[in-house]
Amino acid sequence: MNDMLFIIISGIVAIIILLANYLYIKRVTKKPFLAARKDILLRLAYELGRGKTLTLIHVQSIIDEILLKNGLKLGAISPNEAIEDLVREIIPSLPFEEAEKEELARSLCELNSKGK
Image (cartoon, rainbow, N blue to C red; front, side, top):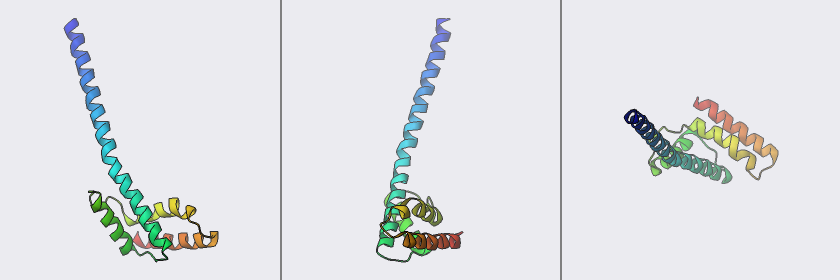
């Protein structure tokens, strides 16, 4: 009886240790991806702030550069995802007039639709 209880408890402990390792690894590997995504958004916002018109090729080159810098595989973030994030998260916080923000969002949405 004690041997059976010992085996069950040992199995449960082993499963808990494996699960903890899996969750830790998953969390650690997600950090570079989130950091890269944030860097991409900031870089695209900077380019917009300088008055540059973004093209899909320009957006893709920025994404590829930052993904390589963070050691992530190319294609992990598509230009369409980056543009959608830019419109959703960055455009509302820019210090522009509402009309300028709407025009910028519209042009980015048009660029996004070309990429699909």
